Image 1 (tube, rainbow, N blue to C red):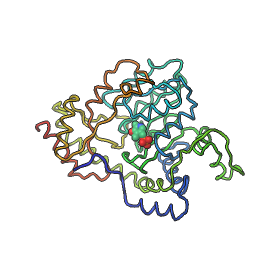
Image 2: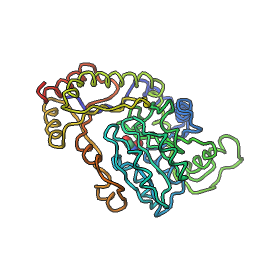
Image 3: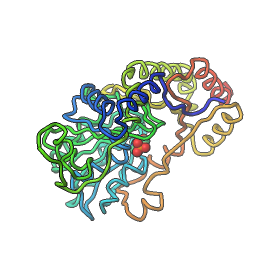
Image 4: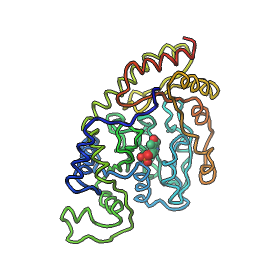
Length: 376
Ligand SMILES: *Cc1c(COP(=O)(O)O)cnc(C)c1O
């Protein structure tokens, strides 16, 4: 059986977790959290990176920091994970969904302007599969209409757009280190803050509304409750697990990129014959091989392909019921424009096994079975 995902594990995780325990610091913001934060800052150039308990929580922090109010609107793709919308729905905001582009599955930047109203506060681009949205267009619109931009870069760690790391282009960027992502700590994430002026508020919010971070830096002589807040910092044991992978992030990415390239090479003949579609990577985007997907002709064919692969010992999965068609999305959200691609493409997409350490022979086996399904 070739599973769809295997959580990344590089070997040093046990040692580092043991070190965290030996240092008698297993709560948040210990040695390993600091290392991870610093690594992200150096890697991306963000003014500040703060490890969080999840990408979901990082996005909630962004919504709180932007002081999103009930009735305000936030524009996002209809094709995304629920957390993108929930973070703003929890603040009483209305998620305004727009259609996606069929090539990258990212929100169609040409449809954003028509969705902007007097109540719009933010745009939330989701970099699907670690492939960047058209950020120049999005940032121009944000400037023109004075909107905030929160990048859902859950899948975009180590990806970039025109040389700029994802998560650092908008006001805030959100990473995920969930078990299913390229780098993991089980459950976890990070909030990336572009501008220095917003760092202090984020630190306070993340530390239960206290100025604890300032206190530890020796900048204030007592620590106290200074604003509203919650607890968004992960245990240093989780950070220790993540640190083992960030140390070898280049190697992990190289390994995934090799699987991606091999899948493409093996399946290109089917694409040339018009039997299925493969991922499109625009020239301005450097991706991270977060996933490899194929697109069947329609839902019926995809269902058959999943069953065929399962029979051959290959686990392939699909995701995202379009949010505007989900019960909660219908209750609290609004779709602007026409659903030309969101539903159709979401019914065609199928993700093939992709993880660090996936073997060459396994990729070849999976591709062979896909070709077999199409009679090639
Ligand atoms: C995984 C993912 C999330 C949620 O990440 P968590 O760390 O599990 O909260 C949000 N958005 C997208 C696009 C994701 O892929």
